[in-house]
Image (tube, rainbow, N blue to C red; front, side, top):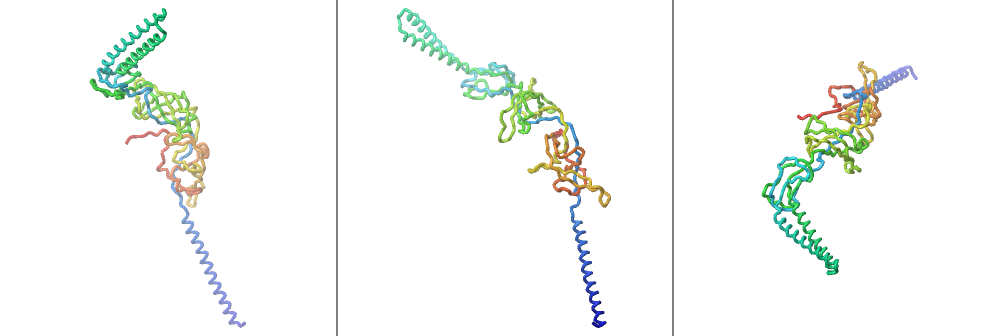
Amino acid sequence: MTKGTTKRMIIMLLGAGLVFGGIYGFQQFRNKMIQKAIGGMANPPQAVSTTVAQSSVWQPTVEGVGTLRAASGASLAAEVGGLVTALHFESGATVKAGEVLVELNAAPLKAQLEQLKASAMLAKQNYDRDSAQLKVQAISQAAVDTDAANLKSAQAQVAAQQATIDQKIIRAPFSGRLGIRQIDLGQFLAAGTAIVNLQKLDPMYLDFTVPQTQIDLVRVGDKIGVQTSALPGKTYTGVISAVEPQVDTATRNLKVRARIANPKGELLPGLFATARVDEGTQRQYITLPNAAIAYNPYGSTVYIVKDEGKGADGKPKLSVEQRFVTTGAMRGDQVSVLTGVKAGETVVTAGQLKLHNGAPVFVNNSVTPANNPNPEVKDE
């Protein structure tokens, strides 16, 4: 190989090296730029609101809603038809058991009653006379038996007639307060026509329901507090008097009845009321806002904020850790956490939908969810 050929060979190899070196450098530059672009496309820190899990004192309670009803209540009506001849009550009056309220025309029945009494008296005389004759064998036993049957029949007719006359008088079946009168003097009443509503307002009963998860906290004899929006600011004391022996399969709730003293008659049947049952001694629970819990078919979870030190910009670097938790009783906007969270840990309360395990976050507590153990409904 000549000297010129060698020189050209060297120049060619150097050129090839420069070309391949340029290609390699470009590849390295491109890879670096791709990595930088991918790093720029990574999820940026997400804004979340947080709260610190705290241990607080809880009084185990059961709350239920229900409807008030009177101890006794009835819509009074006539058993038989007739013309109203006397009214002995006014709308809204308080009456005692057995007090006469309405009288219907019974004159024809009373006249017929006298006729039946006369027939019964004659039957009694015939029976007594024939019984005396039977003793001296002046009459047969069959005749005396017939007289006895006739006497009983006549007496039964008198009793039936008297019962029909009694039905013409409508009395209060129990003591209570009357409603608005539905009839007037001189009006003809058909059988079953409503006359007036009668309610015994003391005591009152509250029928309410509790979920099946809390039935072990409700027992006969437990005291309850009752409130109704019809009488704001007032709390009435009652006692659980009965518990339904079966759970409603449609709602999985248990029906409970409480007895409430109502001497002033302030509570009325049909009012919507809330019952609160305090059970057992106070307990310590880790408390979180209900909004902090993500309820899922596979379990309830929360996000715990973790401090990862400081980032390149010198600011705190935060991330989240997803945990499964076991929740317990609820009160207002709060829920008790039995396992999964310790007191003092920072928990995400808003923004969970955009998070995943290990996601970077930054805290913005300018808006926080409700966390009131006893929220009140305010009318706008």
